[in-house]
Length: 349
Image (spheres, rainbow, N blue to C red):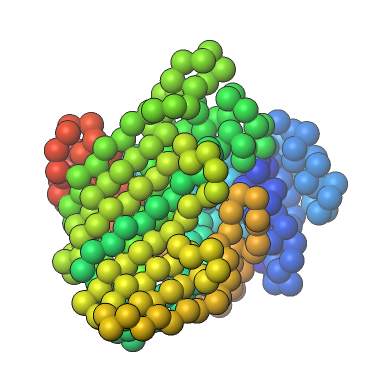
């Protein structure tokens, strides 16, 4: 039985982490910390457990085995490192951290402590993505030549536990990064997962086009990102992340191979559609993609609990997810300098 502490009781903790721990028979929620104490108190009243005055107090409790870090982006590294040094296993929300140095430091601390560090990249568990990877490995569309992947919705101000223009997602001091880190990391990581290839080169444009804060000025982080990714196995394509899709959410991926095309979460009726080069169409009805308005179990919490309990490697291990973060940081550098960037260039920046 893994005894869990949750640091940060905002929306992602309330709709994903906490209820999924509560539903897992091998986990028990022990305690909660949130800077606004009333949120932690609400979670403790609903699920049981203790409210801690500080994150440090929670980390120091020997009863707690593992911690979910669900705080704002800027605090991920500091809280994760503190928890690891206190001897806790950690599941950290995405993005892993706001600098490459912080990501690497987190990984080093996990290795030094002998504790597990997993990152909540939930798109790897979407059933259609799992099935798509199986089909790709079976060669149903041959070698992937090009691709396009998109994640766009109306913005985090509709999702945040404090909805509206004052959301921390729009505050550069707390979020550090915008749509690229919020949504782009998901689809960057998904491409690596599906193709079994890493991003080696990126040409990116990040922009703030429409989102405005409480002062009605454009926010300090990007609300749109478009990247051209070149992959280690030769595949080439685009990744788009947007907070300005003011209609139906788009979380689609289309892969163009030497033997056909695979459309994932791109058809309203079928989660995967494979169109062979001879025009033959095969549909796979798996599970519709989660949206902000349609939440289902992510699979991340169950994987974290099982990986720790069984002492086995996980597809969410930070060492692998770090490669996705490297592509994000390289894309940010590309946008900043207005040029194509080799991912290897970011080391030593």
